[in-house]
Length: 447
Image (cartoon, rainbow, N blue to C red; front, side, top):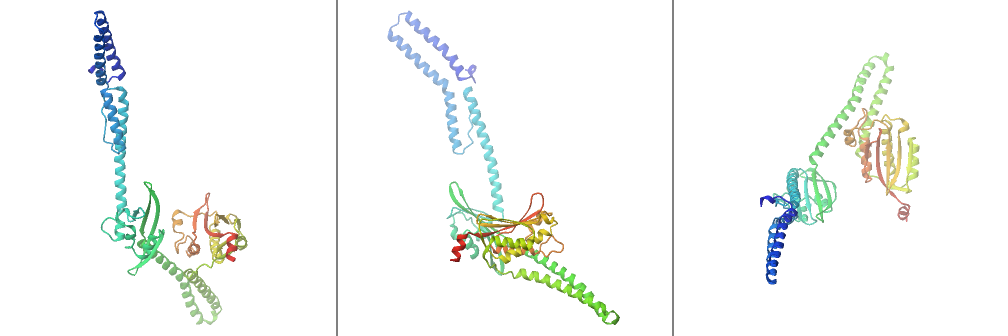
């Protein structure tokens, strides 16, 4: 039967059925002419039907095998088994379908291989990451990495442990933050050393079930390094200021002693003493600024009339301002916020911007009042933006590096956050937000 191999089913039926029907018709005509009885005609017809059925079954068997193979293949795909391929079963009607199935399984096998490789790479990265990761289903740990086992002091995997039992193995401060899912910095003292951790708690759904992800990052070493850099910068800064003041004082003192031995030059002594006094006053102011930073008092919050505070700022700075607030009152320490605005406006005016381009805004967003100070100066680089709030960091040749840090401390004490970003078309904007109080809340508080 090679002459019908790889032919269409329709052609095979046509080529096989036409001779068969012609033979059956000839047989029936011959039996009628030869005078065969009716039962012989019926028997011949039955035999013809049986032969036709057997022939059709044989003819359609490759088609049936292909259909059955595709069915089993699709069931295998449902079970994520992509290893089954189907061989061509001669018929052109099935050829394209079989080829499409085989191409699909080949693509799925390649995708699975790529996915497995990515999962292996991701797992290796996660297992070797210094960040401790713990995933729970709200009760039991379902995933953890090597750093998490070190954090909890276990040599075996954490999977299967109750998270509440594991938390008991942590220091008190870190355990409390983990139980309450409090994201943020957690610090505590252990063996006379301060330990600082960044805790991040993130709920999400996995396979339709609620899960909780805990990330623990040990910042102690980095904080220690930053602290050492800060102290070194502070020592260099103080040494520089002391030398700038003590060196001329020492020189002028020697000159004063020489004048005392030469009475004809006593008139110069007053000028020398004035110079020593100015340098001493400058040194006193320098030390006083750092002393104020170290003893910043907690904010004394009270109800503040927003419009009155805005008008006060406009009078104080004599620059353009804009107010957009629905609420009449806000809740903050007006003296400290005024000091923040003074520092920010002073920085904006010293940015090299035109005086007309320096301004500020107070805008309400929901239950918060946003303060913004902007200019059209040179702005900051990415490196400067990332370090601008660090103590003693400054981009000015005569700056102390505590202005923005002091502002950040004040805003943080008000549960706010100071933000710096470059404006479009040049310039810098510094903003922070404070909570507002509605008139009803003010009345309830007064009652």
